[in-house]
Length: 140
Image (cartoon, rainbow, N blue to C red; front, side, top):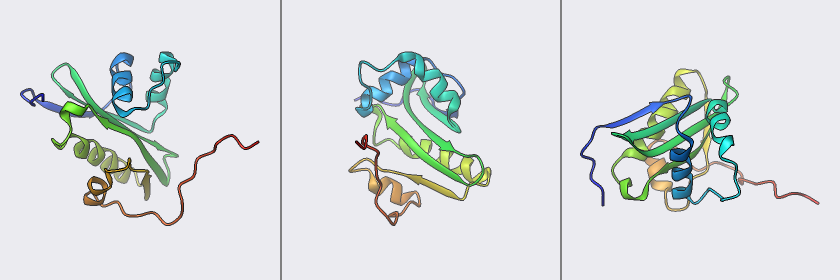
């Protein structure tokens, strides 16, 4: 298991090396090899807020918020490399996302937690959302 000998820096960015973001998406199980790497930059820039966590030159985590910039935000793609989990990095990413959204006046901040991560989000002030999350599956 990797230790955190270097300084942990968690910061909002407008661009980041695509290969490092893909590595994080792979760690989350969200990257398919037929995805186009050229979509990473516009995805980062199109996010309301994109946060990365790094230790020295190693990108160890990320998260982003999608928002209308007025009232609502949705947090997604929060992931930390497996060897750096359980060290508080994910919590720091979430805290920056939430704090920044609140500073901008956003009053509704939602997310869908990966199974098994619910306790982390509850500790950070998230609660069960009334209703059922749904995903478009193509219709006809």
